[in-house]
Amino acid sequence: MMTWMTAGFTRADGQPGFAGVGMRWCALALGALLLAGCASGPGANPRDPLEPYNRSMTRFNDGVDESVLKPVATAYKDVVPSPVRTGVNNFFGNLGDVWSFVNNVLQLRHEEAYASLVRFNVNTVFGLGGLLDIASEMGVERNRQDFGLTLGRWGVPTGPYLVLPLLGPSTVRDTAALPVDMQGNLVGQFDSIAARNSLYALRAVDTRASLLGAGAVLEGAALDKYTFTRDVFLQVRAQRAGRPGADDANGDDNGGVLPQESDY
Image 1: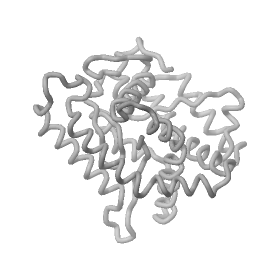
Image 2: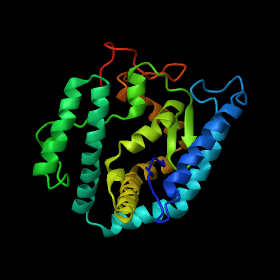
Image 3: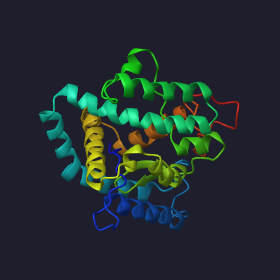
């Protein structure tokens, strides 16, 4: 499974870097979605009308992962001690709590917004800038939210399943929300281009390293990796939108308009 995150790389000359190219590829993917809308057969999964394209993009992403990211992530896991990796993961999770707070506010989820704010303040002040997850030890659970889920909160359907170049599984709605999520990423607020790009690279490697075990289990199982990844991704998104086990024929995990849905 290739669900690592890349965004915000900018070269010193001001030209678009790795993420800029990735976002252009996202636009191309959306264009392919429109052009291939009639390409699916009558037996296609209603949540995945672009399965031929998505499978092709998955193969491309897997090839990049096998040749570049997986070896780097494996070396990272072998060389870096577990407590250090945990601290890195906690640090990026702490930054993510800020954007979760914003989206919880936009969704009028007051309790979840308060919990996200408490988590960030406690972990930043008492957790060495977020390296330690003191809030979880206090019983304050993390509630991950993003702008795609905020759109879903207010009734925007997910649209078809869509595999993006390099970024992996997504939906049409989540892809449209990507530019907003990128702006809300605190890593992108660092003034130093070198520091910012280093943090993006570290996050990508750390995220991929955390998936090494799951990837090994998946590769050893006698199942269709593509279908399994798609179904799990859509189920997790449905749960985060407040509809555990949701399986709408149209892939709509928006959970309805307030006040029907609640977070998991």
